[in-house]
Length: 552
Image (tube, rainbow, N blue to C red; front, side, top):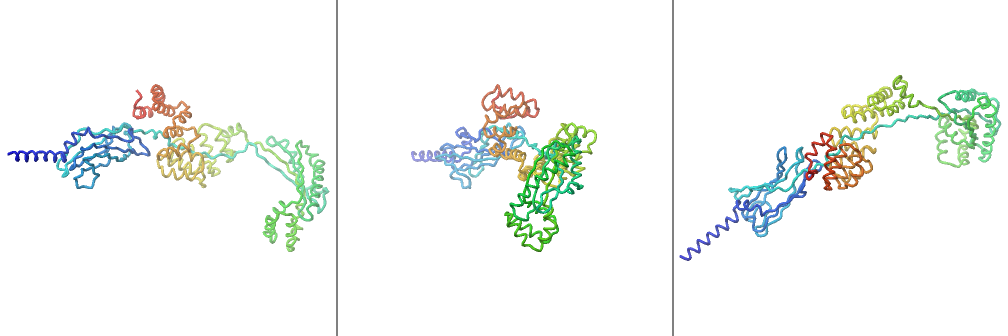
């Protein structure tokens, strides 16, 4: 009788042991013994994704040897919920290919999970839902409560401005245009006296008349006259230097006694002697039809010593006679040069012409005039005139830049497509077109082809979108822009961000509110949120922003 009792007791204990090893309900009932955590505890969206790692710690003698546990991470938000991949765990006696949890020792299991961010996830809860099964999966027990492991989501990076910075091409308008007028007199070989006939040529007469006329020209001012004397590069160099110097003296004397005596110009006179005129020699030869001129030019490029040059050229007996007859006489000379400053249209004159006679303006004047006016409508009219009249690439580019500032992306692209040359500004502005169309890949490709500062700053905005915060902060440093301040906030350099958030715009106020909230300065955070709420969009965002969860 006693043996039967012991046998029955043994069977009962075995039954309890089997039940303990297989009972999914018991595991669910003892759920409080399981601990969970998440890194990060406040979820954060980076580059459009929410990445987290959740950890489950099972105590010893908890996980039944013949049990299976399915854990599903679920992100619950206002717009619904989305489940991540199911984590399946099994006890030591289950013959499936899942991660095993020891009954005797328990286990700590860490698992990464990723969710695609969608609008509404700013206020969300990440929870783990668990269901236990026996090894045949015929019995199951749903854990009574999900494990809440994280809140979120922080979307601060989405404050990045992606409207882009377009580039304007500069004009080359000159308010003062330097001009020169020139004439020359010729000398006989080895002579330095000025012949009378050299001062009566049409060239000299025209030069003299120009000096007279310029004095009554309201737009032109004679700044100085130059006299430059030369010797032809044949003969001994030292003798030619002396000859050139004497020609300088005779030319100055002739200028003062004849040309300037009649013109009576009060301007500085600069006199200089060059010596042998190798530069003029090369210019005349290159413009001539002389046989073997390429060989002559090669000699000039190969040798810098004047004596060697002369010797090598004289050795070309077949062409030297031609040089002596056609080229060298033209180099025995003195040049008279008048240096003029021409006063271009003033800003006031340009503004009048814009209203009265825009057709009178050349390309540079049109491009410059556009910088003098504030209204985009007038700017566009000037750029469109330059584009239609001169087929100006810079005008097309600047039309596109204005359209991009106005958010008229299609019209901007149309203007850029009319450019015949793909400049650095073209690629930057095409990148802004792509950015405004949210084609981030095309935007990056275009910015990479431009070496402009604007392209660098625009690409930094893409770095923020892609989660490359350190790179963005480095690229934006010194720009004093909203994106620079944001990059510092994202890299936890709040002090640097605060230093540049000086404007009173809602955008800056919102970032100051984030910084204050992170410091626990709720009073300042509230004040800045109120200032930022002048923007309806930011007011709506602030109500959902996890950055302000502790601001009350």
